[in-house]
Image (cartoon, rainbow, N blue to C red):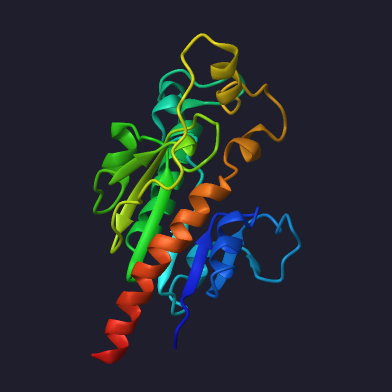
Length: 222
């Protein structure tokens, strides 16, 4: 067997799934939302229900992070209008439980993408470890700013593939590169902000796909 069974959890766009498919792997995306591209390689539902289906590699493209990330910690003391503190803390518990289930899955290779977390989130995640690496889209050919952190098991740090030179702060070019952070509030803002970058997805499929495949071959030969 020369291909991997790859689960891309919390992805509806298909960006990471298609990167692994392009390299000949048996890749599937899974999300509560339908596949944006209409692919038949998308499982609609809770990815936790299929974690034990014999996957070699689990990539979590973007688990819900609103209550886990540093930028949202303020809502745990002063909730937004129309929401209550108990609701905020309950959502934090739900987000931490989801991350925990992915992080502790019985899958040889795991990579989870998320922003930097606050201490309340870390305290709630089983067997928590600090993120292994943070990258920027401009390290992989995209003229964009958006820090992305990776929590890794069975995988090494991602190697930069196409580094661009970031523009100086205060310039119009810097503002254009800050597109994600400058998005206006809209019904699709959360989905657009979580959209993965093809250059990073390609690097993941090339580098982590090769690592997971080598590990699979070792297990089969043992």
